[in-house]
Image (cartoon, rainbow, N blue to C red):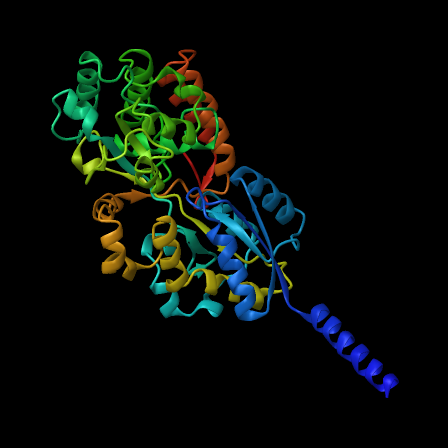
Length: 422
């Protein structure tokens, strides 16, 4: 009898062991979300494991660390990850290299059409959906209404001319020594800032017909405004050339600066968190963005997506993870708990969410002007060339015209949509 019991126990142990060996496993790699101070992505991942029985090795690192790991793995043939970070700046490169699995057959039309059009379209190439957005990282114009009131300013600027005038009023009134703090350190974020200023002056690197535009008057005017703001007019904090996005935001939260032209969605929440901010109750979201003229208003949309590498051996399980995490239910849970912007259209009409976040109305108005970064395979290279030339300009080592001409020279012969830039 004892022998029989022992055999049964061993059989059960062996069965449990074999079940463990046979359990589906996937590896997911993504950057830490800037608002996720509660670890909700980790929690929801563990909820997914319990709901499906699929085990997840969940890797979260800084964006730069994730970029290095993902790019290195894919260039070597892939296979290390089943769900990967897919940044908006990588779309053309990933599509050309055929690194990721089209998701249309997995997702279905109804699911994809529920996602905000701008997010969906960013990761769609030639009709194929290559990624599903996990982060609605549109940028917004925030201002400190209390500081403006001290200088007798009733409303935030609509044009760059007004922004300059208001900044000078703030300086003259002794409210702010430097009304603007920018993230102009020589890193990727500087390239985002450059694109924003270019768009808001009617400029760009190149136009849709393949003509180089960075050396045209509109683009040079944008670069000139940036250079003058920090060097001649001195409305931008001179330390901006060493500031990251987080450091520039921190100056805003401390009341050192009055304007934050391209703040992430988390800016409002952090500005009203007493543990992080000295300006609780003072920050507002504008209904517009400053530009050379109203017709040129533009803000950046910098979404990030999940994708499945072609080399993944667990594509079905990987899709189950994406569909679970990027569902209306989990998306709303993240919105409620950490204030992240929803990914689904219907969520912006949700009374419960609008009651929690009434300023999303202004977010929606600014979002109507959202534009993406240039979608070219060589965007990484463009970033490096641009941030070096522009930072030299910001430091006074190069004129705006010289920086523009240098970038125009670099662009000549580059291919855009299969056509050489000219």
